[in-house]
Amino acid sequence: MRHAAHQNQQQIYSDQQLLANTPLFRRSALFRKAGGILTPPQENCRWDHDASHWWASLHGMTSHGASRAEAIRAWLRTARQSYRSTPTRRATDDRPDCPYNGQAAI
Image (cartoon, rainbow, N blue to C red; front, side):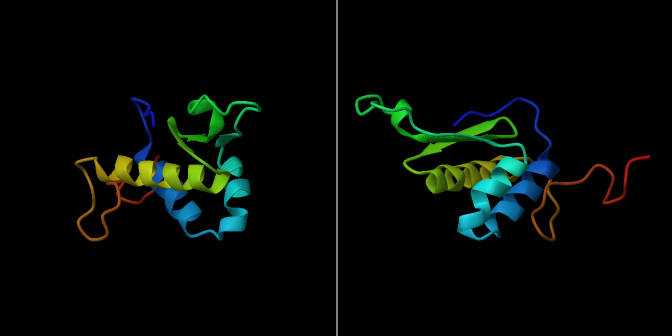
């Protein structure tokens, strides 16, 4: 799994929650609609571990799994760890702190 240096924690949280609460059979379509990239395994790659897995990449974070669903599930775990590792979170519901306190930017 890889992380980008600059991430929008609010967007990561929003996409992670939306994908986590979406039925499994619709998750890959929603993942792609959010701007994610799903890369299937390469053909004839039995001996190459990285090439034999599905890769899911969104918001600069990349995860992999043995199937498309597992790759998205791994991305969900990575996203959850990403926004939980930020020191500025709301105490009431553990969401990343919003610099505009929930109001639109002017």
